[in-house]
Structures are given as structure tokens and as C-alpha cells.
Image 1: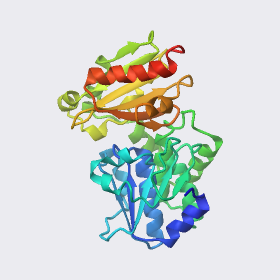
Image 2: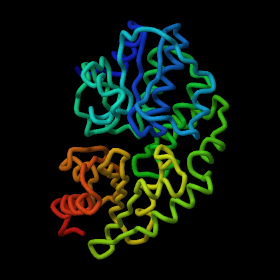
Image 3: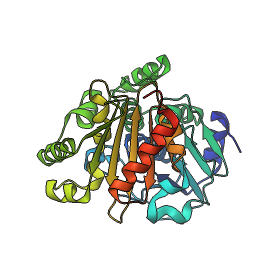
Image 4: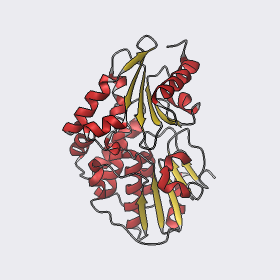
Length: 318
């Protein structure tokens, strides 16, 4: 069932005891929309809890400044920024077929939930969540604004990606008007790295490979690299964007080895290549310029499978 903003707000106001599920390998948009919704529901006197299969990276700790865990038996399952069942992660996989409502902006959403609020043209799920909060008639406070700004900023690359619209800037300005420290948020998200993170990036860049006459750049993040650098797997956000920063590269690929085997693929592309279209052929999905999938293969086989998919879709153009 497809819902409107108003129908979604009505559903949230009519129910209680919410389990809010964020996707595995959490980013700013899933956490921002998840905790932003928690603060809004809390303002209405409702019980809610935010959960994730993976540990939340330390840099997002400020989102939890007013959050507290509540013990209750969930009655309503809500997934935010979660496009497909495989993104629930191992710990939360049992909930994949029990979701009452999904709020998402990924065009590749598999419509697994009983109710779906989907806006593919929104820059971030947090952009949609701001409309939902308004429709719930919850006053926009600094806790909600801090969360929603985080998702809006991170999913737009600090407002420089092609998904940014005039609406995005208007929403960001409105969130800023609550008095939140946007400069600090952006510095934490984009400009602050540990020495271990820099060590990891050096190793990753040394692994770079070029294909299609330099139009595609591929990097790998292995478990050995993570061990040598001392960087936890959940602190690797942003590395996927490195290959696309290279002049002349239209397709940037990151293959990140998972602890239990296989590789998570992150694809970042220019206007000439639809990342979601490529990843959908491999069982994944996402957005036109940023998408992903999982390949349960050794590294060299995963590279070959990914390159074959890109070549099949865009070989002549590349």
C-alpha cells in the first residue's frame, strides 16, 4: 500500500510501541531519519526504540544526546531509508517480512513493507521525514533538526551532489534556523579523520586499479587492511567516494570485504552511467549516481563479475 505524507503521519499518530529499524552499515540518512522519528514520536508521548544490525559509528554519537532506550514489546515496525530485505543485516533479518511501514527515497525499493512512503525525487529520507514530522504536528526542535540535517547533508555530499534541489536548500535553512551547529556537524561528517583512517586510505589508494581506458577506477578494502590500520568496519563511510574524485573517472567502485566472506560493492558514477541499473543486475540497487550490492565471491571473481556487469550495460559508452 502506497501512502502519502498525510497518511503516513496519521498512521504514526494512531499507533504506538514502535521499533524503528535502520539499515546495516548505517549512514547519516538512515540514522538521522531513524532518530529524528524517535524524537518526534517521543514528543507525542509514544514509546519507540531505534535498532540497527551493526554498531553505530562513534561520529554519530551526537544524534543520541537526548535519546534513551525504552523496554517494551514492539507493536509497530517501521523501517527508514531501507530499500531491500538484505539490508536489514543478520541481527534484524527476522523483521524483514513484518514491517508495517517503510519510509524511503530509493527508487530501487523492493516494496517489502505492508505500507510504503516512497519519494525517489527526495534528496534524502530525512527530507521526507521533515514533511512527516510537520504532518504529525510535532514542533521542530533542535534534537529533531540535528538528526534531519545530518541525513540531508550526508546524502547530498554536503549539498554538492546532483540530487540537491531548491527544496533541499530551503529545508536545510529551516533546520538551521532552530539553532543547531551545522558547521560542527559538517566538520565531523566530512573533514575529521583519525590517523588510523588516514593509514587505511593510504593502503586503499595503493590498491587502485583502472579499467576502460581509465574511465573506471576500482579500490578494495580487505579485512587485512582493516586489521593493519586499526579501523573498525563501521568507520569506513566515505571511502567509496575516493575513486570518483580522480580526474577522468566516470565510474568509481569500492569492494569491501565482509568479515564472514564476500564483498560489499559500492558504485559511484557520473551522469553517463546509472549506478542503480548496474547494481540491480547483481541483486542490489540504490540511486542513479550511488548504488550497491553484495557479491559472495573471492576478490578477483568479485572484480570480474562487477566489471562484466558494467561492460554489459555501458561497455560501448566507456
